[in-house]
Length: 70
View 1 (cartoon, rainbow, N blue to C red):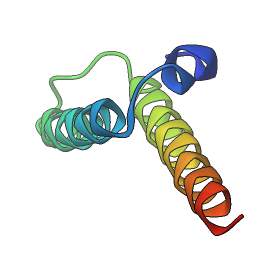
View 2 (view 1 turned 180 degrees about the horizontal axis):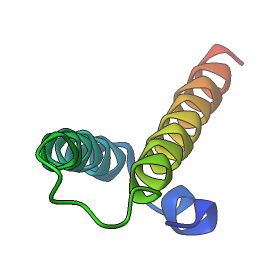
View 3 (view 1 turned 180 degrees about the vertical axis):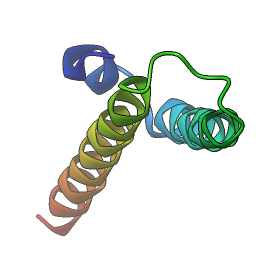
């Protein structure tokens, strides 16, 4: 997921994406514990995607607050 793609989404869509990523991370960890995963690097990619979404979501909230205060 690219940051430019995420910036185009609304806050609701970002929250939905975040929920999906957390769900994927949980499923991936479960598969990892049962040795059904071949690509272990995918877990770090999911974590990075979560961080990306959270960063963009917080910046949108911060921008919205600054616009309402002025």
